[in-house]
Length: 156
Ligand code: 4NP
Image (cartoon, rainbow, N blue to C red; front, side, top):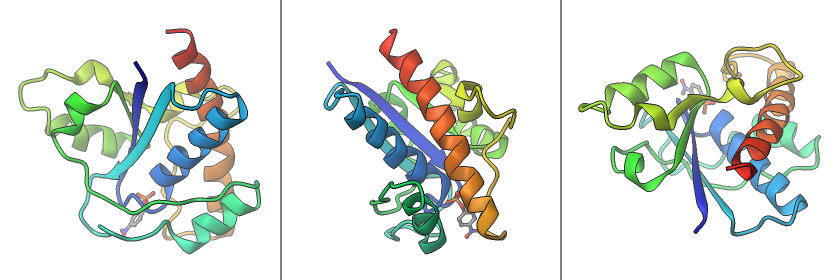
């Protein structure tokens, strides 16, 4: 049985698709294909159907990673479908928990930065309205957090 991870941000065009693709990149690098399945979603409906943001794709490409995917909105059915749900920031975290009406899935929802070890950030900052450096930081922070998450997932 494969372990299923869902990465969640606001728009599903910057941070969470980056996390999903970086995680898949690490999974492939370590020969763990098929053992861990990754997906991503946004809490908002703003960009449904859109490709990852061009600036985010450029930052990922600078680290040798290609971003693919199509934005979708988080759905309550995701609580059952996934083993772990990773929120990029506290506002995403709260928005997800608000949809868990009967408080059944709280333990499945975590903050992505809990798995980082090289960076001290508590949240993955929203790069949307900032400059290029913000996008580069998101990629480096997610590389760190994804490494930690992968180790944690493998030990389960
Ligand atoms: P994301 O970034 O949540 O990392 O995908 C954003 C994308 C779009 C918007 C905000 C953040 N927006 O306001 O449209």
